[in-house]
Length: 211
Image 1 (cartoon, rainbow, N blue to C red):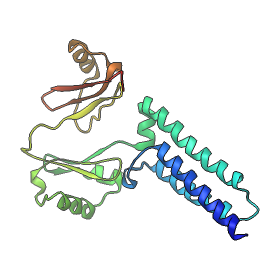
Image 2: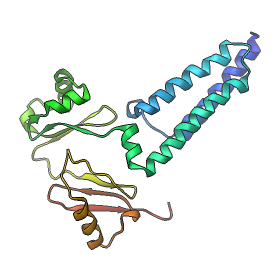
Image 3: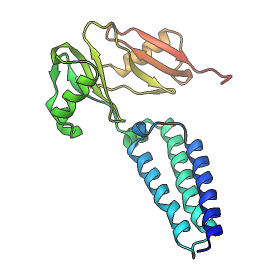
Image 4: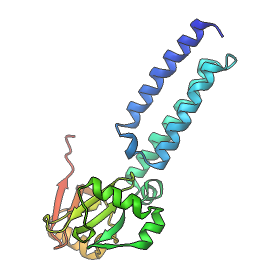
């Protein structure tokens, strides 16, 4: 392969992938869902082919890369509106510790061993499990820890106009929630985010039509 052709292909593919990543949105590597991670790996692998293989034209190399980027954007948009698909792609948080008690079945479901759990607790400056109100394994793999006596914790119940409760964290009756929202003078579709604490106090963040 001619050096000039290799340099040209490399530069074009580099900037093309940068554009795709910017369109896909700003997220840290640790926050990528399994689907996002697979797409990122596939794009990285496909980017090499037109550079190494002279018979593959630049256009032939860019088409599958842009198709993967388009697929990721399309599914991300659908998941934004469809709670079931979002759960399928991203999973849901798992409570590993509740009120100082380790939930062994949750550890087994998430393939999260005790050494990992203790290490993450230490990173949160927690050395006594009895002091933990909740330890939640997020979908990104990060462990979120709430200590006892640190004030009320608020949990999401509506995300982008869709009811999105996690019964493992707080038990809620969906009909009660709908009546409560109507009583407070809101419609579910107009709510960007609603959070609730254990005393059933709800905070509303309404969609801004000008955004």
